[in-house]
Image 1 (tube, rainbow, N blue to C red):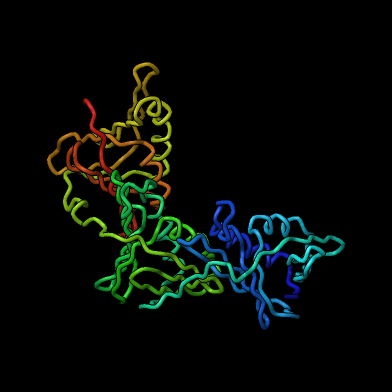
Image 2 (cartoon, one colour):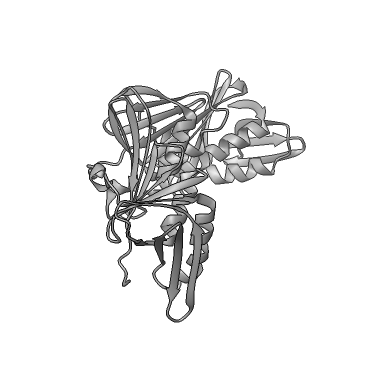
Length: 369
């Protein structure tokens, strides 16, 4: 293998594939597979649950392939000067395969491994659908953080993609909160995308991304994002019937400025974090009162402007974990939001003003009023 390529292009590709390389020692999954053929150089990393291949244009003088420790290669390429970088596969005096990287007067010789030992990324055959890059990025960005981080409930560790009746729904839940994002889609399919893969897909969609093709089978999903192909195993299991968790009606609707609401929640969190993270909300008249307290530390109270619509004319109150609300505000992305509540023991529903394709359901905290 012998080729030249711009350092900036190679460095960017390594940053894209590096998260898919495993951190476990003594494993080929910690390495990146380099494959040069024709006028292309491909980089592949695979942690056995998810893998990625990035195709780059390069001046290939001799085809071939090799494996190098991914994090070592990342550090080496980052340290090399700007400009053209040459890569050549050789054999050293100890009869071990190496690759020589040169740029200007700088040169690295790295020990390589056998490419035939690298775990393959399995092909994904199934239904293929084209998705709009900006909407897909937004959908995963607003849902993957709400997945469960623990493996005790595997079906909650992924984002459900469910396409039916002209809409594609992205749904995530962790037992305390639920997030739903919808976008148009004429296909019909269902797939449970692992949290890691969902995050990487949204990370690798850029403003200049032209297309995303999704292929789904019963076990895997393939996201083709321009010159990048991301393959992931699907989470197996039946996702909960999330529609039953979303209240259909509400007694009180509160409209507030998102930034002002977030500032008040974060301020209340300074006290709330000393206990169980509890922040209390009281909707009265033309405002929303936000309170927190901790017996050994003190208390906080702040009234912010709000539009309160009550069907029974009674004061509404509810308590939430302040961390969940901070996450919600970061995801909701609108200047104003609404909070719909029934009773202090029923879930609260948060929605952005000006968009009807996203909502967050947050379970209340049970407190002594």
